[in-house]
Amino acid sequence: MSPQWRDEVGIFLGPRRIVLNRMQRGLRPVCVAEHSVPVEGGGFNGWAPALAVLAAEMADSRWRGANARVVIANHWVRYAIVPWSADLADDAERLAHGRLLLQEVYGDAIDGWTVALGETTFGRAQLACAMPSDLQAELQLVMESAGLRLLSLQPNLVVSFNRWRRRMSPAGGWLVQIDEGTLAAVRLNGESWEEVHCVRIGTNWSAELKRLQTFGRLASGRSESARVLVEAPYWLRQIASETSESLEWLDAGDNVTGTLDRLGQIAGMHA
Image (cartoon, rainbow, N blue to C red; front, side, top):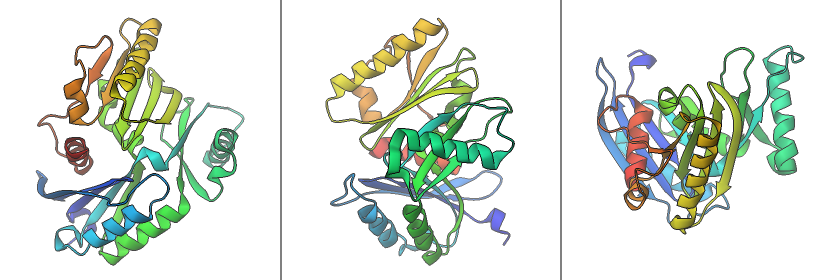
């Protein structure tokens, strides 16, 4: 069988939870398995507990012998906006510039991390993402042990942006994602990246909802048609007002066909 027609396994790797799904490939991909498992003793100081749980799950035949798409929780990613510069001649120079900007924000903390730039159109700013190189290397070993061919490894904020970009107003606004004790937000002006923030959050949800409403005021202050799109666990939507001014709570509903779309839906239900 051609590698392109193998089943796809989606994996969300977070500090406190692992989520998996398997899509049977065909003209109409079908989800044939899904699972969410907590990381016992998991926390925010390292990824070893999460990878140990994932490695144990790989003993299950449901997840073996397929292509794989892995999503990394925002907790293990660092972000920065890289403004467009005509003085940078090629992708290598833009990547080096992105690493310098990340180092200005995070210092030596990203030494030994792998930096990548998000795709964009010519002349527009890019999103720089940094992930620990050791995490990627150890994850690759787990994939190989299960006979999985890694097709993509992406931060959760980037996956969310790709999922919902068509819902953004032409006037721009904010996309906010809440996962695993982290709130990540990116502001766009049309299709151009302008700001990115990623902060640790607690369990005081009244305070976090006020933070979201602040994003709403910032968006509406720039344009009446600008909005804040919020991707969050389902239970948080239930305690929030879905009619909050300038906030749009995102729900994929039944319109889910891709591996990562279904993975995000499962993660939202079990977070």
